[in-house]
Length: 118
Image (cartoon, rainbow, N blue to C red; front, side):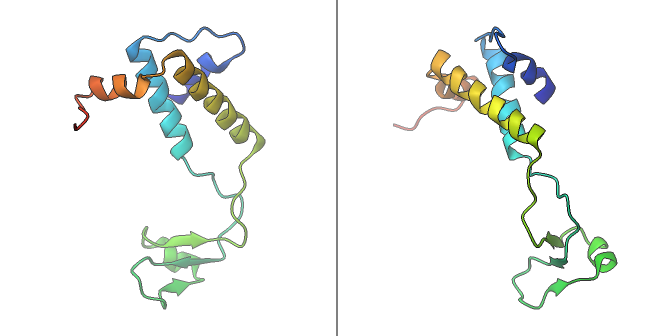
């Protein structure tokens, strides 16, 4: 879906404002922004999010046996230049889409049967 949306982010690309394309582009934007950056380094430890302070290990094999273990890094993973450029392009599209269609949020809600409580 993101690759479909990226074709509208090229210079001088015509962005259609029909509801179907707009919803696809908004969903692609949400998907892209929700994806965490991939770690470029190995975790130094893992913690188990059950609330107990003693649930921590540095044993990679042990931590990989259970997917709930969360990796910990010495430095937060950094985005690559390509990821940064893609996010910037998606943000520019988002801004352009809202300028071209200022009530897009209401139209999307209406398309999904969501009504404002009054």
